[in-house]
Length: 165
Image: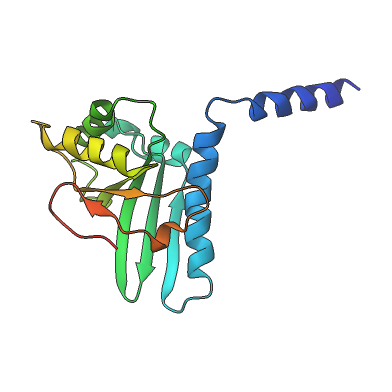
């Protein structure tokens, strides 16, 4: 009986977690990439690291991306760290995260991919990133709506260093 109450309490806590939507969104992003790659020849998600693994691996750099992935398609490989932006932080705070990534990008990743929920948020982030005065990592933004396939989304470079499709 006590174990049942503990499990029920843990289940309620998880269901009401303030980070549940964020975690579900990140996991959904990588799951959708895996689902997309499955039937396509030469296409696959080679690596997918959780936020916890990223935090452990790059703790000494002071960065904590929401995920890390290696996507391969038609002999092209893209290593990226994911920042899953849900919108409550001011755009300048999200943009400032890019100043902490230069040690990681390009050593371990090709770019920081910032997922945003709307074109208005994307525009606000681009504006905030354009006025950063410190070095920043190569980055791109992608508007990905719930249920949308991230592999079918065009990412827009915010650092002018590459085009991602």
